[in-house]
Length: 401
Image: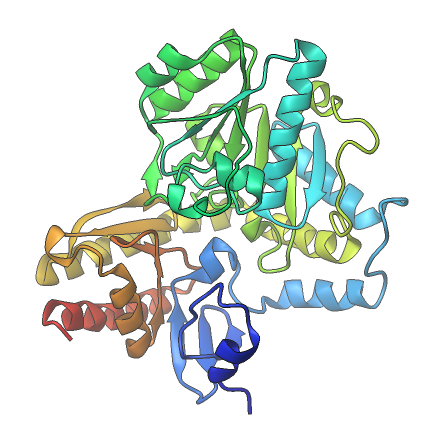
């Protein structure tokens, strides 16, 4: 039998997973090796947007798996072309580049921004502006662009000409941005940084400044995309259109795929061989993502996200009124952050552990933030049951267990 101890023996110590090993998932529930049930409020970190083993996704995976799995980029394939077409129809985009992950999609976006600036303007236009407490991936380029030093320590020297400025501080951008700036990359909601939403005036200001200085505005929608906020993509709720958008996580609802979306005039700055990905755009991933996009880009489903948000927030506020662990409950759609009060500062991971013991899976976003990112179609009874279990975990923290 597989046991947790084997992780410590055969895996590089890059993660510290729970002692519990899930072995089965269905909808918004998972079960461990002992058969214990858990309500899933984590969603694979905003990945399992349609829950576990959605029957239509399973069917597509099986069908495509019996048809065509993989081709090199010497050839194209039907699922990739159809997915790109539908993404363009659903967004501002005119062109798509597929990758395997969010980090790879952001890597492509940053490289495109640099080469576009050099081809269209001059070789000195290389600065990338990013934001403090941001997160854009773990490749060396994307981790350098992310605004959290803990993720870059030990990996120096880092790629240069990246400037980090305060999030939601438009004055700082106005003071710093120049004709040397080739791009500004921003998360509409900072996920790993604590579930901090961008203010509409901030994103509107970024758009205006990028247009003024011929810099590309890149929206990192790895975590906010594919229905998470109640819009297909968060930019549509802000009514601010970026030049490049990146998406992954829920794009494949658990099957690895990422994408960079842009306009033709920008995308054409890449030439044959400028960038590449062995698995990017493979027919298996694209077939699953195409079905996921069809299911999520639905007015009824997206309205249901907002209804579920109200149920979550109302339930969390009621729990907090009785137990009093949180100083703030925030977020958009089904990306929700609960910030712990100073008395319980640093105990988000402990609350995750206590929640697991009670049979509900949650996430953290730093040491002080509990993060919830459940399925967009989580059944209402599962929300109620999961909140009841979370209440027991909160009580355990409060009494010091």
